[in-house]
Amino acid sequence: MSMDAFARRLLDWFDEHGRHDLPWQEPRTAYRVWVSEIMLQQTRVSTVIPYFHRFMQAFPGIAELAAASDDAVMAHWAGLGYYSRARNLHRAAGILAEEHGGRFPRDFEAVVALPGIGPSTAGAILAQAFGQRHAILDGNVKRVLARQHAVEGWPGRTAVNRELWALAEGHTPGERVADYTQAIMDLGATICRSRPECERCPVAATCRARVEGRTADLPTPRPRKRLPERESWMLVAAGPEGVLLEKRPPSGIWGGMWCFPEFPGRAELEDWLANNGLATGAAHERRALRHTFTHFRLTARPLVVETGGLPPAIADDDRLAWYRGQSDMGLAAPVRKLIDSLTRDAGQREMNLEPREERNP
Image 1: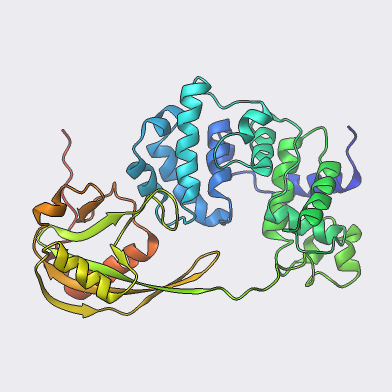
Image 2: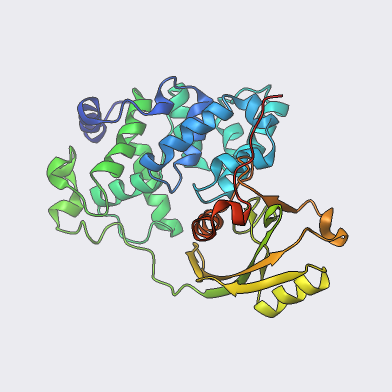
């Protein structure tokens, strides 16, 4: 397939201005590209880089990731958000270990069948790792193409998405596919942003949105919808062994992460304390935590109580554990912030949050 003018200009720009030193580019293995692509979903490169380095150090290959515990994987993902990505990555590693001999497949259908991998991510991995010709259509590419061709309509609509896929397919060259894939992502991430720097853009001359003065209007934004509000209460139980945490179910918000036990209201929280025989001392409310998710806004009201150890009725519940700074417990970001706040206010020793000493066996 011949290379069109758009792809040629983009590659010329990439050779001089593109990102050539990203950590997953050297060495560029399918595993490293795969992990980076999952981390980069809805997350900036600058945020991902330190997480990627730590993840590779802990899980250098498919075998190590497949053999790791859920808690270990979630602990290395804590703070990146969108935690279903980590759960799917871990599940996919198990599938690769069991069904593909620990190797990342080169077949598109096999890749897209893995948990957490859609057509664009599959194309990006195969293009960058193996040089296969596959179009991609992540958020950055949608923005570039919607402006370049003045595509009307919110890209989340089926017809608009189909049109953008056709354009992505048409522009993808038959050679230097890995570089082209990185180039168009780089263009969207560094120049064709929400406020584009058209004077630096290598394809500005053919950009219909720029010519028509419509870069602020394209791509068409998602129709505004008022996010519903939810409220809950979080139990922050400080005892002799640390702070009580509960492991959340695998699905849902903060799935698989360790959080404070959560209740729909204060009455339900106090009933749980009473019904389970947790003797408490003074209790006081902390400032509410507000967190915005994709589909709703959450206001969580922490109630800090002083308590002793867990009574026999719930002591064997493996969903509950005391936290004292263990590095292998993946904490949801708001939980980490609140623990840090409590530690600063009360002092590590009083809150029993000093990290435990780790000794080599």
